[in-house]
Image 1 (tube, rainbow, N blue to C red):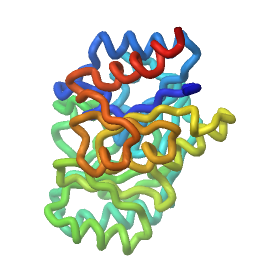
Image 2 (cartoon, rainbow, N blue to C red):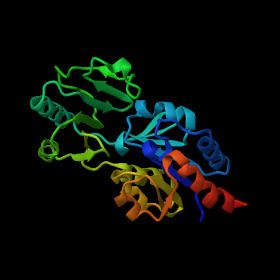
Image 3 (cartoon, one colour):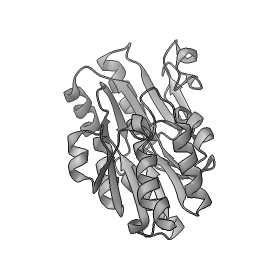
Length: 258
């Protein structure tokens, strides 16, 4: 195995269930970087929601916002957006279903939110309040809203020719540019780095990680991953609360270099 990149999801994969990153995991990732192996995160979180972990882990590249953005040490190097008209149509369709529904919209590192409780949010306390009374005039990477019925989400997505993403154990739905996702972002990254996908070890836990687990040289599921993910993975490691990512890297990457 000639590992040149460690690519990992955050929530329920690299992060413990309490949202922390263990010191052992940080130490192992730093050892990778010291050995010349790139460390990359690939998360559905908005950039501002991943920022605290970016500061802790200091990855070489950050794929965030469901693969619609790539940053290199905080500097944007890739962005996949829906056109402004489509984005505003989706927002208005969501408000028509429920005028009180909370909607977040990502435009690069900035996030808009029509909540009165922004400051109380652990993930999105840096969001900017917007009641969407006026159409947005910025590029839109991702729109998220809580909906009680998946069929409503599907109808809005189909009508606007965008990709729909749901999340494990949640009723939040993301509306994304049609040709976006972690897979597309990874392809853009490896192209810019002139790297072979076979040299990447990838870790994940949820259905939106299956594509990247399949495309990379080695796809590893944590033991707490959903069953479908485990079926597509090449290997299964310990759970996120047992430092599964770090344990697998130590045994199969770092220890093999000595």
